[in-house]
Length: 419
Image (cartoon, rainbow, N blue to C red; front, side, top):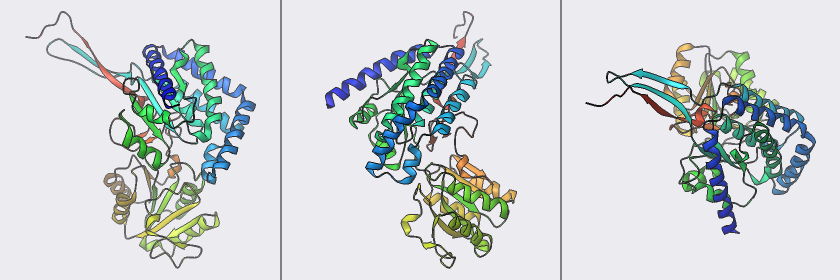
């Protein structure tokens, strides 16, 4: 079986590389047409998608997935509509390939342009969320890349159905169907093979929990765009507006607990503990959130004492850690110690305090008076995203079509020689 998986992956890699060579110069309207046709194919098969998803949900429940993970897995008609709209939004965006990033003339007579160019072949390894099949496929195609998708075992049937719609879109637009490939196996050997396919894959994008990302980073010989845990913090400053703060904190935690932008830790300025801080925690408790509180908050109704390991933890559930800090510098120190450099939000009306928070933290996304649930490529105007990259090389924050390109230099002369 291992030999069969290895041969399968090598074949997929060769076909992806050939497809990438064609996509590199595919006209923008042709790529947009493929995505539009894929969206139509998806909507035309809603009953089939729901049937496939039902099989995945049964499998996930049998495996004992948490409620948050089940929520990630669920497809309903509204979510399918949203997936199709995401593909259409990507189709409508400006094509990044060939964009001139800079150009200049040299005294030698050379005219130099730096232009966007596709990365080549992208490998995406992800868990649970079947919508990643569409998001990753659409963005890679938009950026002129071929992609090999390896979805989680829980979303196998849903991802297969979504992939089939994308292939129909490619065929309708006259593009190679090998441009978007889905590994047709739950065997973990396929993941191991992808991580070693240096001849066929140019970059790996892992999207999932700490275990998956850690494995990819430890084992990959192919370059990786890291998407680490979403240990997102919200800092309630002394100068916070009470109405804004109460709305934002509850939304940041409860809108969807299973996404990487869900708030996992609330930091409260010491001066607010028995005032606005107490009201915010009461709001969370009333919403059904388990608040695991640090020292200085134990007297508040409904909280549970926090353990040391509750700070720096991605719960992905109706649970949030809470701690008291002396000021914005205390919040910054806490985030530096426990954060994952994903997304942090400050609630304050003080411009200087907000600027200090923005300047002294280095997370991929920093927000003011806004819910961390906005940490999403669609909400950033990217149509969709493959993930939130928390590393510092090449791509950072939401990884959209532009982040899936590199660049090359085009140099024009006129019989120009070097003295």
